[in-house]
Length: 136
Image (cartoon, rainbow, N blue to C red; front, side):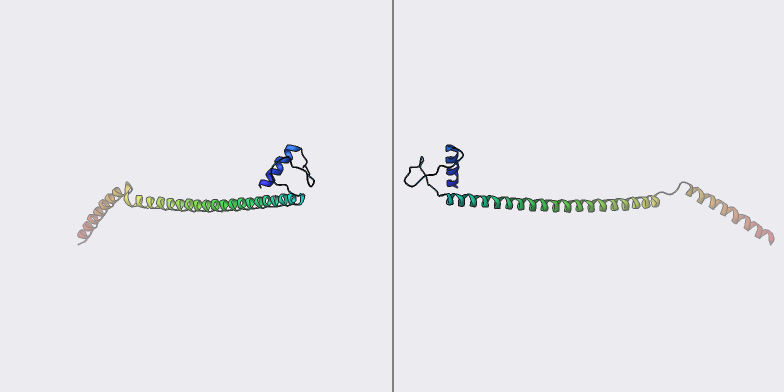
């Protein structure tokens, strides 16, 4: 990596082209001189590593997105289940409340109806008793 950085710095310092040296010439800087094949290998290896890094990053991103979507769907399903359970329990409670209200509260006409029935029964018994006594 140091070599690549050195090459890039040297390249920008001396224009857009490399500065080829011939055997015996002095380099204008301290460092390591590489052959064009070595530079090509370094560049190819770096490009390969960058490409692999991009592929790995994309894979990690896709896996993370898929896991997130799965977790989201699971939570949505859990919420839907809770809402349905809550609605069912609410309907059951309403039915139970209506049932208990019917058990506790008697209609207002019921005591009057019982009283009137008792009075009419008493009148009927007295009437029948008098009829039976008169026939004898």
